[in-house]
Image 1 (cartoon, helix red, strand yellow):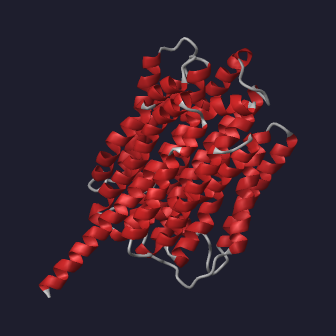
Image 2 (cartoon, rainbow, N blue to C red):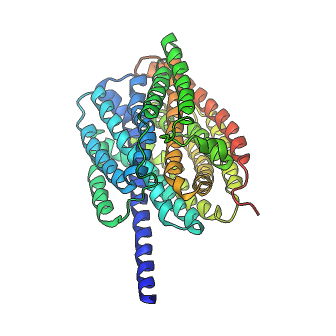
Image 3 (cartoon, helix red, strand yellow):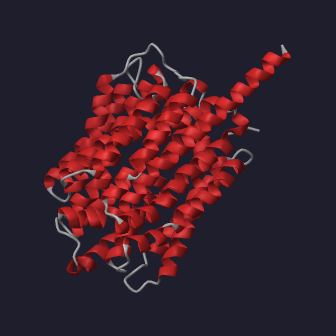
Length: 467
């Protein structure tokens, strides 16, 4: 009996660490791709003669597709198995990385980025849910902190690697380099993960709800990209109307694709998700803007710009495990709210940058931003995953990823809007540098205002642990 129990405990432990390994590696690879591409954007723009708005869609299309796909693929993972969806998502990510590196036009690259976003959604919707399913509550903050640190390690390596690859080889190498790593991760997941972790086996996918959500998100982002044109305004209104219709529909179907009721009945969960949405909306566009700023305004090479940008994710990677572990003992809302306040301070400082700003000042601002992000992210994720029952882990994991991607999409949407208003459909040439600099400042001011509002929701979420 003792021997059987010991063997079972050893198998459970091996399963837990295998799940953490796969989740951490995938959490590293996908943001690595995202952040490295930012450094290649000017080279992509020069190669395809793409204007500022079209160039922003190379990054935005990926996020829109991921945000659209997350809701239905998260539900499919709960129905058919999270391991299965995870592996197929990694296969799609790897294949589209190769195709993006071989793209023959800006339009083809954007199409491949859309498909890559779907693959990333399949990874995001399952990785955190798998880890949360196999680790006990007492260890959850620590392992989620490790996973978040892997995300930030990918973000940290991405700018330098992206800049070096672009400068040494070409922008195509940025997409080709992660492909063999993705293939290796497929093999690891296939051989090491033994469970499927279904939470809704036998249920049916709500196709109508998925379609309403997809159309709403696409209308919203397409509308933002063509503002201030009147057609853009109509699309934005239609997008928000579609999201409202999606909520109405999901509250009435017996097997919703997205458990909207959790937001109405669980204050900690709802406000934590909203805080994540706002925080990502206020911060994600910073790397995109600073990448262009350092190369266009400061005349840095892609590799030099990557070295400057690495400051933020390095700090995030260093402090995220500590913040996650601390949230196992302290109320996550206190840590997360403090982190969001520090983030707001960094954004305010960045609004003052100009052509004569010294690099050390920019590095200092990015370091402060990274520390605030680390202090917010791990505790906030711990609050989300620990505020729901086990059968909702897939929904909660999908919600975390959805809030992150919607926030990132919102952030790039704000940047795209500023470019459309102040630069228009034109390449960023030296003559347009004053307009570009103004658009950077206005976007950062909007980010600062968003972050201030997020502090309220973060602090008002309520206690996770009632004493």
